[in-house]
Length: 234
Image 1 (cartoon, rainbow, N blue to C red):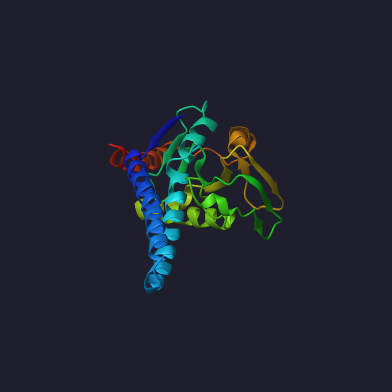
Image 2: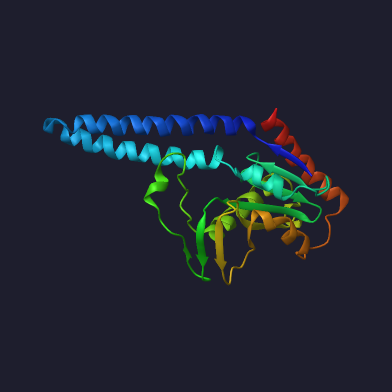
């Protein structure tokens, strides 16, 4: 399998994560000192809110772009062994992770949550931990991974539609992938595959997908994606 990763974007986002995290902690420390003087109490409260927000955003960014298992690394390890007809694009296209396969495109919606994660067919649930705000342990809110995946698929289809007239002939499907090995999934009645990264390759091999793309169509799709990957990774 070939892999293309936008290392420039990762480096830039990693720097921003550090700036936001340490900047937020500095603002929080400043709010503490300001609170000692009652004349500055309003400014102290504002600084407290700003500091919490910066630290939280920084820790979420660090979780996505610094902390292991990072999404691109987890996918590369999980998909290792596929032939070069499979190409993985990380942070290159309008959605973060896309796999080109002989039968079309797969979008991976990465989630790094650990602990118990449940889906009952209608609502997602995961435990909330206040201590996850700081120290690089911030977690992006679980949200609704299935809805987010659907939005990613729609965005990729729109992108292809702007690049090629026969884009509707290219199947675009997707998976929700949890990368933390400590996650405990309890998923029922999901209308898309929801898997742990370690099980992704086996799930893909067992899945029944459509016929391979025609050689001209496959070549056209790969050319479009490779041109963008070359631009973003060189």
